[in-house]
Image 1 (tube, rainbow, N blue to C red):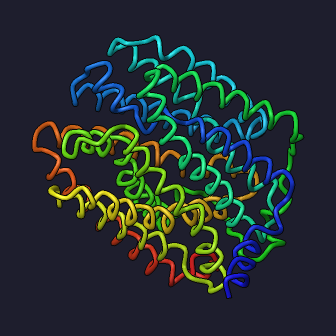
Image 2 (spheres, helix red, strand yellow):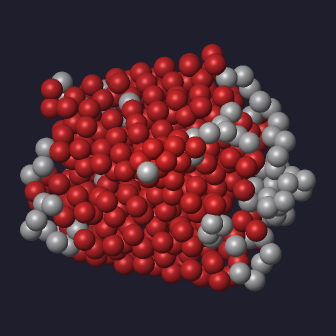
Image 3 (cartoon, rainbow, N blue to C red):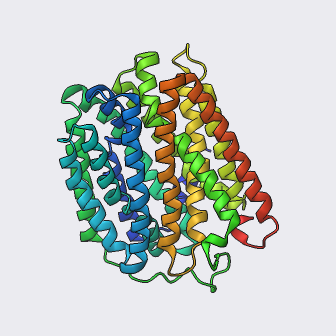
Length: 409
C-alpha cells in the first residue's frame, strides 16, 4: 500500500523535458537564497528603526517597482524573447542586492527598492513564458506546479537558514547570499539551456487552448484577476505584518518565524503535485479551486484573532498553505492558457501585475490598519477581504458556465 502510494507520487513527476528540470533546479537555487523577503519588514522596523507607516511606504515602492517590472518583462518577452529578459533580470538583481544593503535612509530605500523590483520582476512573466515554451502542452499545469514546488522547497530551506544568519552575522549576510544565488542560478541556466525562440503549441490545432481577441474584453478574466489579487494580498501578510506580529505578540525569534515558513514549504512540496494531478484527472474547474483557496486563506487570517495561544500560528499556517496550494498553481495555468499565440508575455505580465498590486495593498493597508487600529482589526479586515475574493471566484464560475471554453469548465 505504501509502495503503491509512493509510486503514484513519483509518477506525478514524469514526462517533463530537460529544460523544465533545469529551470526547476535554478529556481530552487534562487529561492533557497531568497532570505531577504520574509524578513524585509523586520529588517526595516527593527534594524533600521523605521515607523510602521515608513515601512508601509517602502513596501509601496517595492510593489510599484514590481508592477512596472512585470509589465516591462511581459512586453519585452514578446518583443525580444523571454530568454534574454530572464538572464538580464536575475543577473542584474544579484548585483543590486549586493548594493542595496548599504542604503539605510528612508528616501534611499524607497528609490532602491523601486529600482530593484523593476529589474527583479521582469523575470516573472518571462519565466512563465519559458515554461510555456519548454513544457509539453499536456504537462503545462504540472510544469508550473513543479517550478512552484522548487520555489516552495527553496522557501522551506531559506527562511530557517535566514533566521540563523540574522542571529549570527546580521541582516547584511542575507543580501550577500540572496544576490549571490541569483547570479549563480542564472549563469547555470545560461550555460545549460539554449534559447528557444518560438512556441509551437498555443494555437487552434490544440483543442482546449483559449484564443481571445483582447484581454481587455475578457470580463471573466478581469474578475478572476481580482480574486487572484485578493489571494495575493492575504498571502503576502506572512511576509509583511505576520513576522512583526510573531515578535510583538508571542516574542518569537527570527528562527522560529523561519520554521513556520519552512512548514509551509514542506507541506507544499509533498502535497501540491498530487493535488494538481487529482484536479486535472477529475476535470475540476480551476476557477472553483482558486475560489476555495481564497476561502482557506480567509479562515487562516480569522484564526489570527485568537491571540492568547501561540499554537494557533501553526494551525493558521496550515490553512494558509492549503489556500496557497488551491489558489496559485491553477491561477497560473488559467492565465497562461488564455494567452493567444505571440502574446503570452503580455498576458502573463497582466497576471503578475495583479500580484504586484497585492504587494502594495498587502503591506500598506496592513501596516496602516495596525498603526491606527491594531493587529486584531487587520486580521478581521483581511479575512473579510478573502471572503470577497471567494465570492468573486464563484461569480466568475457562474459567468463562464455560459461559455464553451473547456479550461474554465
